[in-house]
Length: 454
Image 1 (cartoon, one colour):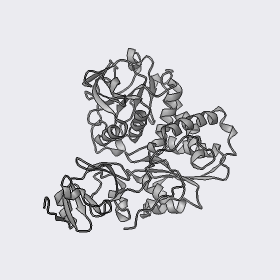
Image 2 (cartoon, rainbow, N blue to C red; image 1 turned 135 degrees about the vertical axis):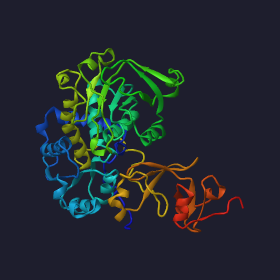
Image 3 (cartoon, helix red, strand yellow; image 1 turned 180 degrees about the vertical axis):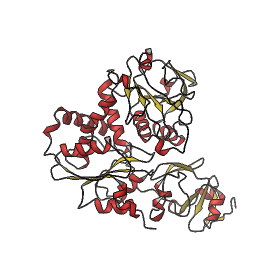
Image 4 (tube, helix red, strand yellow; image 1 turned 90 degrees about the vertical axis):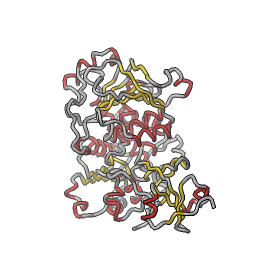
């Protein structure tokens, strides 16, 4: 296998919403406001720059929004919008595609791909900035920027807002990115999933570990059409402990005021034939509920039948405004990544492009949709981030961020392995460590049980 390509540390990518600091996001909002004031005034800002949109999944709004934004900045656009007409249909890897297109062909790449973690691969191999336009069920950070920007403009703040997420929360990459961002800004999240489509455990684990989010059962005021669609409503809050003490032992939180309801369609392209009969549907009767009096209705689009058309003209329905605000928001992002505007805010403390732990003969990502288990088997070295070093070690795939527990630690020098809690395991030097989920996995990799407690 080829070694992992080392990133160009001088360039900035947007693969995850965490590739931007909270302060940078807020500063980008103000730049977006400037662009939006007169969209036609910026045609010299990125003159000479070329953006390539590499879309290996269908898209209308995301691709056209990016292309409109670049054209309004004075740049040019080249596109590969049909997978059947790209070299991927001939078997070319994503890594090779971005190495060819990112350089003399284009100055910035926007990539949409069906496999989780594909955007991270593109960022590692491309010499130019890469923007994640959606990778499998992983993340969709620019949609999150647009959603946050819309909510910020509507409510004047993000901290302390009560945001209901409804529908397919398991497969919606938009929801995953949005959750991470809402937690960072101190908003409270109420999940109302369609049964069987709850927020994935790995998203909840990341929210708890990175943002201190605590979870409680939620009792949500009557919202006809969506309340009662799930008996698994949950309240997620990143509030400080003394605020949490206001709740009754975090066992049940009454939600009677809602600032936003974020509806999602059933992501059927990523389902395995699960039924979506009686999927939640937001209608005029939903908006008539007292709790929804000041709520904004949001949707990343396209909608199918989860929002009635007869509420489109309600001033609380802002999903088309979300789409409209995507252009100035993406203008600000691309101008920043291309170095045409500067941000005064500090960048994140640790960008997610930093090198991780090469698994070697050890761990395998358990996410079957991860690019490392699909086209990446040809050329990617399995790479993980150490999230928790004890009880037992928890590592996350560097591409799709799916977590795995490593209950055994191997020594690459001696080819022996020990249970993670053994003193001998703690003595293995970092560069020699190989992690395994199970004893069988270690044995299959050619490691032998070490002597413990000698």
